[in-house]
Length: 143
Image (tube, rainbow, N blue to C red; front, top):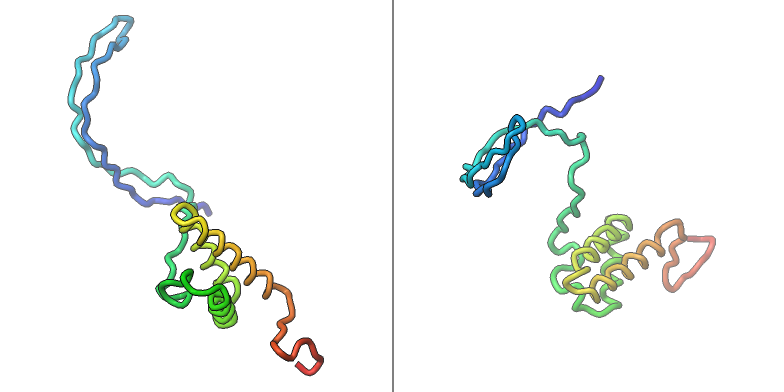
């Protein structure tokens, strides 16, 4: 069974002034005068493929990475915050939040963008498929 997207979209066209032009009508050239086109509104069927909407970065929850001023804190404190959060909510979610910050700051503050990327790589590299090493015990068979 094929599902057809039957959603209706509203198209709003602005009014504008169309320039004069020469048209060919039945072998004759006809001069069409400049005219005002009125604004119009009409509905059309959504022709987009279902599920192919715009790719957007989801909004970050306020205070997710320790509140405002995350990048104003020391590097050690930033790492402590992200590693604690990674243990609590999962490494993938934290990496996603840091990558989102990296994208947001790409043009406005490139230094913060690069730092967010470095932090996301640290978190991803330290959790994925690796054995946790707890300080000061290290590796042991009793853990």
